[in-house]
Image 1 (tube, rainbow over the protein chains, first blue to last red):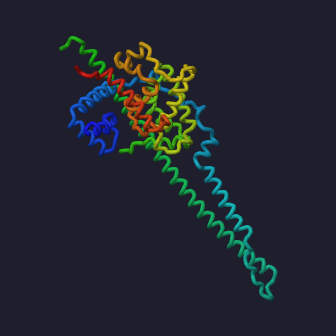
Image 2: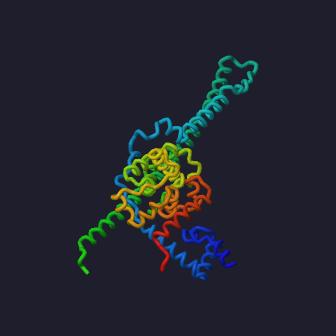
Image 3: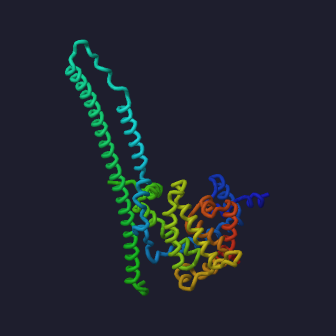
Length: 199
Length: 175
């Protein structure tokens, strides 16, 4: 019975850090209670420690292709990828709708021509109405432009902030790598200068 | 000013949008791991270096196809696995089972102690790869299954068989 229970324990999985919390707890208890399992687990630990002690190889040279402009995406891919094309499409559609609204909508209500108004007076009334309509359109367009400029500035600031963040992270990473290399160099030099016979 | 560490997922998103700098940073983070994985599979530095280059090139070209940006590392190793085994098959097209070729003397001296090199030499390429991914690269079983595109049970079976061989050589029974 005990043997069957022990066979159900995934000792290798436990040694490799796998398994649920319950499985790990069961393995821990079984190892503590069974000398055979304990010995087997110790052998596994020994094997894993030996394997984990193998050092990683340094790269003979850094791979370098991302700085090569041939791999950079074309302006078209960048334009498409950045979503600007979609934005441009939406903007064009919006302009078309607005333009359509102004050009096709029924004209301003006819200026009532009172009997007795002369032709110049009628023309003057029409001119006033047109001027007022043009002023309204210009006012709306100016407001829209202000909004778009504000949005563009906000987006630009956000993008700049993100890029600054990335550059800073890259610098930090490079600094860490450099520090590690310096430490390694320092340790190597210290080992060399101490010599083998200084005890 | 303290900045949040840029995570792989942020860099993957940026790189997929065309940022070469973001991809460059991803390369600098992962190139050593990928190189060491390939070196331990193919056993030759120059081959491993060439393959590392190919892996990152393919990753860059296919970055937009990466479905889940959180899974960049397993995805990258999946490409590395395909590249390594393509090379092994090209070099030994008539071999049904891919056997690990022990590293050359200069590499063995630098990379593994002799007894470990001999023990690893007894493993099949697939068992050896399972050891490299789990013990040297620290992947979880689920990630290994994703990288190798095999069921979890196959991963366990390869790894546990490899551990039995290695245990016999590196930690023999006392007495």
